[in-house]
Length: 268
Ligand code: ACM
Image 1 (tube, rainbow, N blue to C red):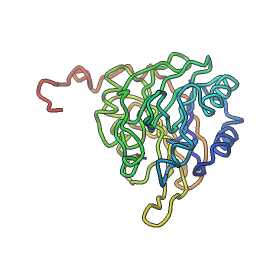
Image 2 (image 1 turned 135 degrees about the vertical axis):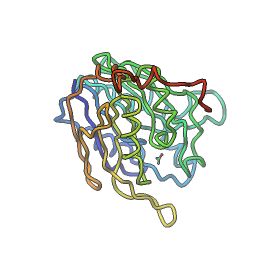
Image 3 (image 1 turned 30 degrees about the vertical axis):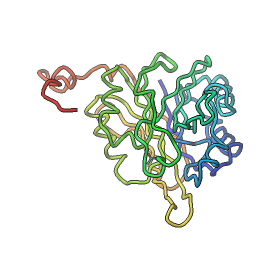
Image 4 (image 1 turned 135 degrees about the horizontal axis):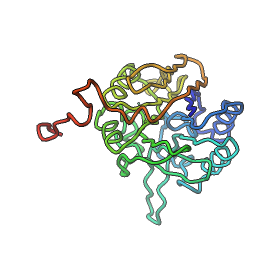
């Protein structure tokens, strides 16, 4: 199957612009699954909860969902994208999660809520409560989602791989320099494919100004680089993968990356 990584530079608080931007980037793409960056509908450096509330949307019914559902159907591909999720509740103070959605060509969808919030995200977002889970994308490929800073915690990718993920979809807005390298280890130690979709550009003012590091990548089950994008420019890369390769956890004839684990000796 063909899988793609999309690197973009969203505009803060301009959903219409951001939806069109991603539609343009993937307009001529032929692929089975594509991954877009974290918070790609909204931008990242919020100054207040009010700002964030103005662009957050409920899973399933929001404008971005309608947009990407139509796009997934038209392009006949699964789409993974990051968005600020407004909790669907009658409570006076709904929570907002930093979420990643999978939308399939048949309209089915799942939402993962970011477990490990990064820095000032803690001021505006609630920590995710979905935990890590595996779901099916087009061609029945078994995917797991994690969002950006989840990379820092090896338990994220390991939880997905132990549940049978063949491919980790990883929408990101990276600002620290280590993730791309660390994900090679996450893919290698778990023998899974991974797609890290990062953004480019700068956002925010003064001490809150952030520069995003681009270099989005697709990795194979040995941590090998199958595709990578520029540090500064938006772009798209597509590769052909065989997800079944992720079923093979053999390291040597006498070693298996999963069967040889000794959880009774580990401290979590
Ligand atoms: C991050 O988690 N967006 C760095």
